[in-house]
Every structure is written in structure tokens, then in C-alpha cells.
Image (cartoon, rainbow, N blue to C red):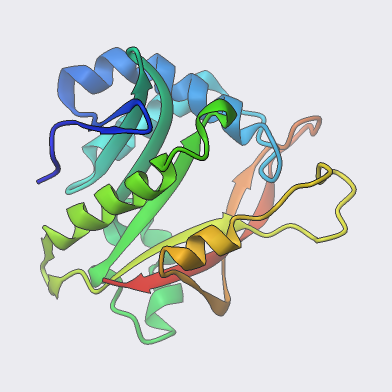
Length: 208
């Protein structure tokens, strides 16, 4: 079980469940829309969709939602769930590469407003989700790996902002590595587009 509250970089980091999640739902939805609108996702978000998405995540068996707050305001969010409880469609990608999908813990989004980055909150988000995964047991046994995916963008995409640095070094520092050619797809509408399109998502994985 996760600790009820911890302080990281001057922010309160805590799991959100029940009434606390209900009270923060609009903050969380706004945060996702704001952060994912920027590069590299360029996501044209909908608050109604985001509320439903987070509510569904909260209902996933053994899922976890962790928030970072500044004086009560949600400024960061991270989610995690057993792969089969929330993102079952990706199970064949793991099975094809010799991983048992039932023993994969999927780390969903980890988003933080720019002004709060560099304080260690990103590490805390991974620490808490991995600790949560270690505390669980799937029907097949303990979870063996944590995984997440990130959008694939071309290095010469003209929309990339000057000075943009991918998070690959941070993720490797956390012990995650890319699985060659292990790509899933998520569909969303980009800023300025008129319809949703598929986006390739590269999977990264770490042994627990």
C-alpha cells in the first residue's frame, strides 16, 4: 500500500482515491489537456473525455493514481495499472516477445506542469508506481516488469520546438529500456487537425 502523503520538491505527492479523486477530477482533466497539448503529443483534448478516462482508470482493479499538489492545486499526475486491467489491447505485443502480459504493470501518463519540473517529482511518480506494483500479486504471480510507452516522432519534424530534449536519458536512468520494434498505437486528434489519427507508441520496459 502506498504511503498516504509525502513531500517532494516542496509539493505534496499523494494517491488519489474515492472522495479525494472526485474532488480533483476537473483539476486532473485540465492538467492532462494542458500538458498533452504541447510537443510531442500535440493533443487536442476534451475535458469530458478526460474526466471519463481518469474515472475509468480509478476503477481499474489494482490501479493507482498519484497526484502532486501545490497548496491544494493538482500540478502533476501519474497513473498505473496491471496491463490487463486497463490496456488489454497491448497484451499480444508482450506475449510475442516472451513476456507474460498478466505480470506486466503498465505505467500510464506521468505529466507535470513545466514550472514544477526538475524537483524530483518525476522520479517520485515512478518510485510510487513501482512500489505499488511490487505490493501486488497477479493471478499468475508477482508482477515481473513495469512498462510504459511514448509517442514516436521524427527527429526532423518541423513542429519540434527549439532545444527540445527527449526524455530517453531520464527513462534509462530509471532502468527502462526500449524494446526494439515493440510499437503500439493510440489514436487522438492533434491540435489543428479535424479528425483523430493513429500514432505509433514505443514501449519501454524494466524488470521489477
